[in-house]
Image (cartoon, rainbow, N blue to C red):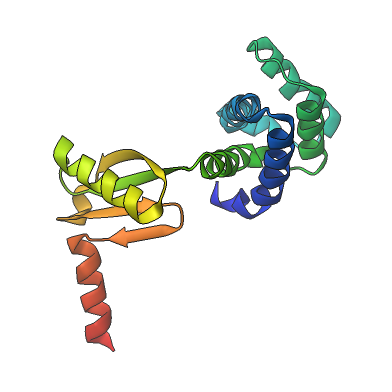
Length: 181
């Protein structure tokens, strides 16, 4: 996804503005999530890398798979898929969906906070982190946690562009840098 994040931002912002103006944020998010999962499929990835496939054929294929999944999309969504196909950007759909979701959460006053910790966090610890981040960011927090034993101890908290590294491995890395100077 990182390869397409820069290309995804302008598309996602334009889609977000259109969806917000039309009051269709959830409809667009659902469509983008489905399109992103289609684009991420290994078999579809093989098709996207075939230069012999026409952009119009790729777009029609995408739209037919979306229709077969039972998701209704409007003409604007169809135009987006066709535009992405023409510009060779269908592989950017997962990144576009991610950026769109972030913009939607921002507009709704929500943010997703990810905590990677060396050990499993208790419910009390999770609540403290969530309330602290909600207070700091002024937004409703959705907390996800994962265990990363490579951190040795502590945790890394990520919220959008904000990264708080309170891990032992992070502190050792800082100490190593300081000693090498």
